[in-house]
Image (cartoon, rainbow, N blue to C red; front, top):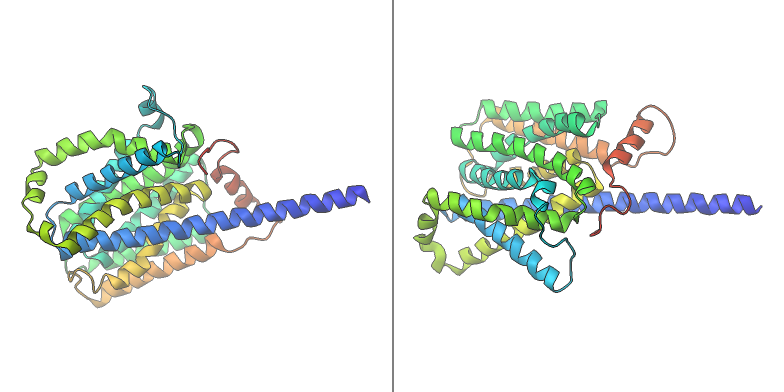
Length: 346
């Protein structure tokens, strides 16, 4: 009887732990999706609607906001991360370079392209992430995941074939961002498990190590002068949205790390693209730079359908036990969730 009751308590504890894990997976994904949606809309408004001349200066503002917020939060003992030491750069490399490039080229693509096309092209990062997860983390996607990913990428290709507002520079920026996004998600997962400095440490030192190179590069490009001469600084509505964009850069970085910690790099990438479902349709009215065509709209909607399919496949509640794909899902979770005690800032 005692053995039976002990077994029942153990089973109840495992069920409660499973529910908590599922909640963390879902809530972190929703938080990231909402943050990603808001910053995309705010960035587009600042760079296109207000015609702010430099996405490089905006990225500098986002780096600065992350450094200031985390520095003050540590002083107030609201967060914890290791003090600076000489080996930190080695421990987190190449994340700072990936982080800076992802931010700058992402803002450049946002400025150069309409939001619907930007959202469609960003889905190429999903295929790259899936391949990198296989090579670096050893994670094999299921057939349903493969089908949804190829639907998203195929729809994006169809939309690109009839993009009436084609911008080569914007396309190049987005494809570079896609590559960096895939690398960032995979290596972020790896560093969270091995660098022993937590998500706040990764956010702080990624920004700190890149602020000076970014400042020098922006100055050499002449963007600091262009931003200084911008006439919109007298508009309080613009200033509020510029500052909001800077702060949202920090919130987005936090949500990316949180989602990657509780899910997988591929899930984080696709949740980021899922928010583009809203961005896609709202973007047809924001910025005024989307040109409608039937083939383009059809491709965008196919890509959106693939995103919805992946959401269903990833976040549906999987039954316990079983073989085949169930065992694969179980081993996938073991690979994706950080080992106990590794993350000190949960």
